[in-house]
Image 1 (tube, rainbow, N blue to C red):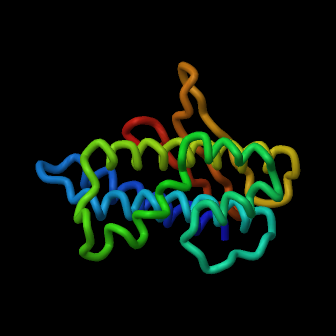
Image 2 (tube, rainbow, N blue to C red):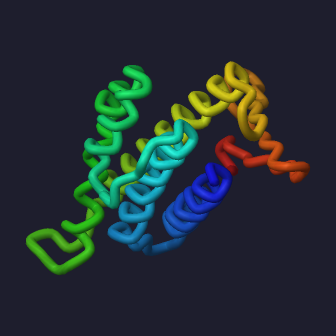
Image 3 (cartoon, rainbow, N blue to C red):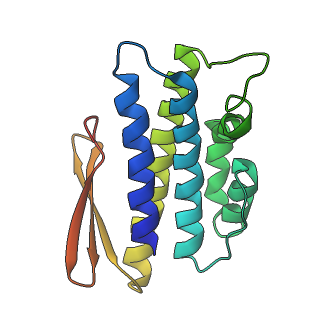
Length: 165
């Protein structure tokens, strides 16, 4: 189940990051996908810890649910991950501001990447400590995470997480 959440997250990240490389990035769609990525990573952590997931898009609510398991999730407030909640509604429909700026969009991608690293590291540490489910590992090179490896009932998957991942 956690694998499925991570695969969906990677899809959101890829869509957003690929779109950012175009000549005219659709910033509202990119920011929406970054919000979705953060939301799904938080839900993956909750699923991993056998917690019920409420139907919500509110990042702060999900962070609070994760904090019940691990107080380190306060870090997500420091990087302003909860700010991404606004991209679920505010920019999805016509309003005062139609599109986030390129600067805001780059920040949304950066936040989503930081959340990704934070959650994957948490999942790996929990997995090594508990050995209850799929086995996760992280490959590091030069102080940066390069890939996440997962073994799911005989199926080995590597998730690249470096700059090109």
